[in-house]
Length: 231
Image 1 (tube, one colour):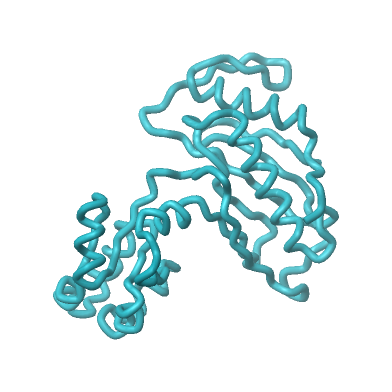
Image 2: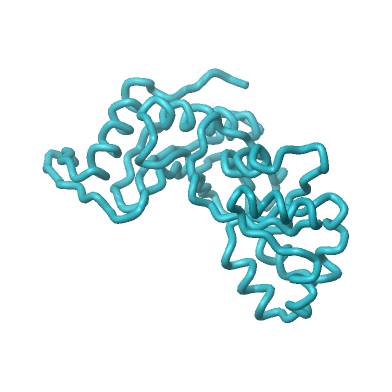
């Protein structure tokens, strides 16, 4: 992976400003002072990346996932579609779960499956149940881009959930802009910085001309202004 082309001092200053703004502090923008506001939810720190010298029509589409060292969005909601043992484990870990019987009750009703897909950010299914999911629910979860991740009988459920929460995905569609969560405003400054650097490096490694395909990178909190950190 090519070394990070991000300016370390600029990145550090920007992350400091994001954290200050999200806790109600003042920051300077274009010579003007603007006052932040503390929100009643945990803001996510997002990375917005624009591409250049890239043709979505002709160039090879790319897709890749990368596990960040710290979880950017700890509040993501998971539901386990499990066999009896996994449902029991999920209940013990305070994770929502549904058994085969629960899924059968939805009766492949498109509206109910859509509602289920909307309620959770991601799904995990026991390895001996994964094949039954399309049969029991139809294509609803796949359409929502939330087809379950397999949990093998040897894997630790909590570790699997944490791993998915820490994993970011870059997938090229027909637009030249990508958006990915790299942290949240409750995190340590250094953790956010590392996540931004790793996410940017990983994206560069997926592109044909690496950093030369990246036009600009901005970072912002959910409700805060965006700041460019790569030009």
